[in-house]
Image 1 (tube, one colour):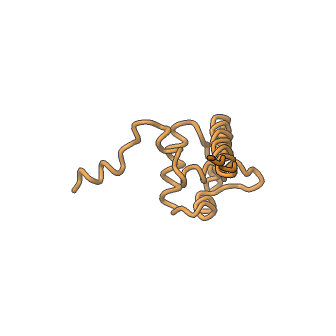
Image 2: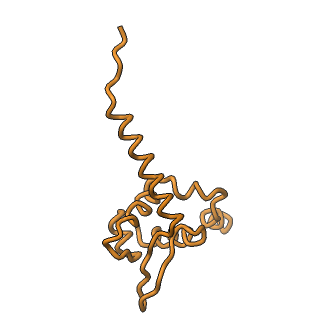
Image 3: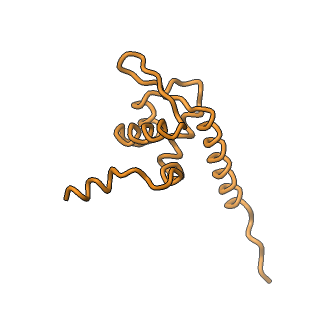
Amino acid sequence: MAEQKNEIRAEPKRPETIILKDKQARIILSLREKEQEWYLSSLAKATDTTYVHACRFIGMCEGLGITTSERHGKIKVIKLTEKGNQIADLISGIYGMMQNKQEQPKEKKD
């Protein structure tokens, strides 16, 4: 049973495997909104994830240089780095391409 817990907490083998998932992508895209100061709790609520999930994901992102955080007392303010902004732009572009693909009318086969 202890081995199973270690498998769950194991670091991903490839960094891209943590970013190209729905919840993780929502977190990254939310951080693009610079008019709001993002705290772990507000980020979790806005992206419909748990606080623990957001905390773990942000920790991994900090390790990869995607996000940075500043402590203001007990509260951490989370921001995207330049690398994080580039990744957010790419994710947004992929989502845009996917939506455009769905909106294109299907060709008629005669």
